[in-house]
Length: 75
Image 1: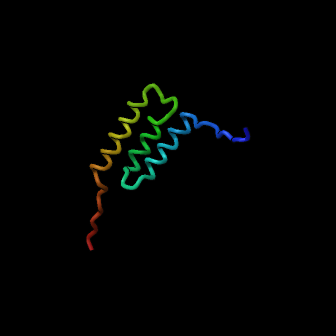
Image 2: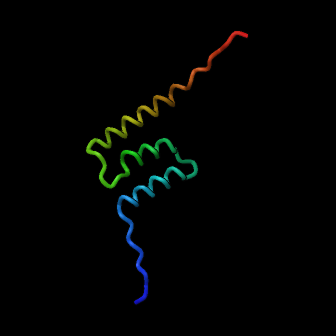
Image 3: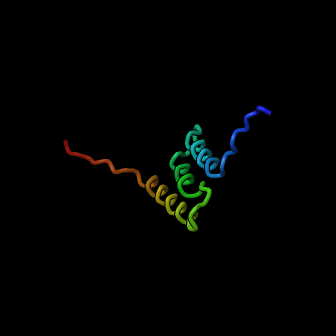
């Protein structure tokens, strides 16, 4: 029995890898994936993780809905 058994992946490692995979996936919203990885994809998320994620998503939506203003100069 010389077979090497690789250690099992922990839930935390799995969730971190999932978050990274979401961020790297072509066509994925990397900002949203980052929010999920930061707040939700945790082995032991905070008690208010959903509220924190919702707040971050609302902030992101607000930023995206209000594009930066371009200054107009008289020339």
